[in-house]
Image (cartoon, rainbow over all chains, first blue to last red):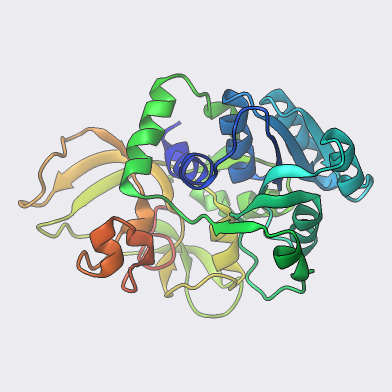
Length: 201
Length: 121
């Protein structure tokens, strides 16, 4: 469990330090990787109606999101994410989005599914430049925040959240020796794992 | 010791290598790794999509036991087990951001697993 404290702190920073949602809001988490699923756990614990978007390759991770308390999942390559989200929010769009995939198409979905005056939170990394419908930022007057890492206070808060009973060890899908690191990296890239622990030889 | 090392600036140039055992400075501890999680950032570094300083041992989401501590280290017990917030391995402590507690934005910050040696070892 201890190896999950650092990634949990990154999720706690996004959800508890940066976000400003309220009970009754609907939130979109785009990208059900390890950080995205930790964000889902933190939102579900606060009773937030959470929609999680991924691709059909993410099915295993989307099913985990449902198990962790997500309200609904969407496979964006098979379903019309924006249409589903509008139907779920009375045509307004979600109040807050967490972009945790680091994928251009995901940002586009997040922007199109976010209501005017909504809060966009960028957590994922891309490693490249993007082409986006940036006019929406002005037309819908989005508030945009990044979230990276944590501050000292986040560490203490993370430890309290764990002490108060948040379960994270159910995200460990694999454990292997550092000698098998390449197998672990390949499993992550194929989205066949959530959290993989590497152990010393 | 064996470690997973990104050994130069080319993408996907990582392998299991022998690395020297770390030495404990006065303000440092040596942690024997129990487990270290694979993070998306490790994959970004592997593919050269994230700034890094090779040769560098990957991995920063770890837990382990402190087996040695330098003489200036306080509030750390041996052989207690610690989770480590490795992203702030190096920071200046004096700039406007460090002063505010926002160490992530220190220009001199180096995180474990990309800026300094990490925990896949």
